[in-house]
Length: 303
Image (cartoon, rainbow, N blue to C red; front, side, top):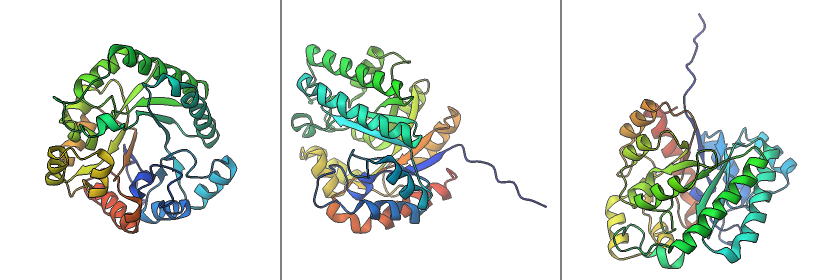
């Protein structure tokens, strides 16, 4: 008798940041072929594009390389200072290039992030002390997000806003304000369990709270003791990543059984993208770590 396996409600991917890739021009980055090879070897079927220019930007070449490894691109990312009006022409031009590539690859999502900046980075996790954008620059940021979203829709790509430690959309009040200022049909939401913990936001509560806007999810796990040290010492976000504040799924403080229950309750059926930011010089342990993370999710019934 044939055994019929129930299809998982979740699609699991990883991202180049788990190999330390944040800047495509960083000479310490591992080769892009290594990232694709190891993502496939670990058992993933999806991978984010990562910073534009790290993976090949020729869609035919990239499609072929992905096909060899049975991988698909789940999303691209625009990770820029969205509040900086002078940067807007560059940001929108880059958005168009990314969306053109995603469209040709048959990808679905564009993750939109206000990037880590020098001022806010040292206040990551310090919600009561962190300086906020003034209203003028907030409106610039919201306008830029709307224009990014318009470009994404032109290419049939769904934009999702990602709150991020060290940027100007990080804390609960900022997430709430952004969602109120941006209409549902403009942009949806990507919540990241690790960034929620960093911002003192309970990821289980926020997944349920934002169920009507939630379209994409990032999974991280966080070493609680190291996070406390990073916050108390005002260590910048990137230095915290080099320090090893992130760890494989299941080895940190995020309650993933509760996360799974929450996602099941809200009937979430989108992508789950595992990330473990690190120093690219430490990419030698990436295969081991991304394998641990995926195996933990398998054992926990995610896939």
